[in-house]
Length: 237
Ligand code: CA
Picture 1: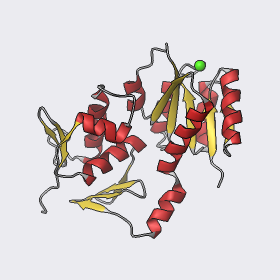
Picture 2: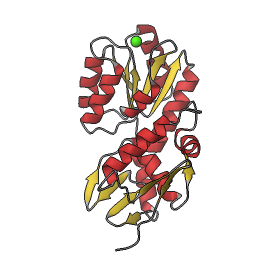
Picture 3: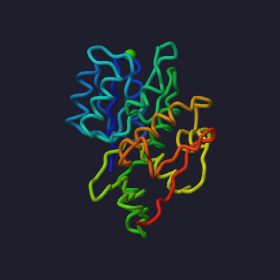
């Protein structure tokens, strides 16, 4: 199935270049030239992925990103930023972006990044994985289906951004082990964030807000002072 990508970019030359190269790579591409149109199109077209410029007329990329997440859309978002933008990448990721790329980028880089992000969240991949034995993690009312991108807490479905979900699954796969912020950073974010571990703390706090009954007294995700975090398997009740 052809994937649909929405490019929100006000610079015509960049938008055209992205459209051309993505179409060459076999994607369907729609373009919006300002943030408000981009948001409207994202909500109505429900694309498989969004390439979202930060500096946009009418509504900036950060606000578009925030609005999309407020509408409970989990569409992966790659933010596009100029090198001299005062773009706080941590804030961007906090608002729900999954990745970002700094201009100028080569078409090859963009395609590679798009493919990587889509591979992670492709429903076909999810479906294929579901047909083989499905993996489920279950702890005291918390059920995590890593292949389905689904988390249930006491049978209620929770909304996660892709990065929050990846972080949760990584913590669970390494349960009862202390993981440093740097380990989490390189496992979940891979690149570009060397040294900037605030993003880990921000995501941990989002996870706790969602899965812990009392995020100040977490039973699942423990802080190990001076070291990092640990997902602790709670004692069966
Ligand atoms: Ca721009």
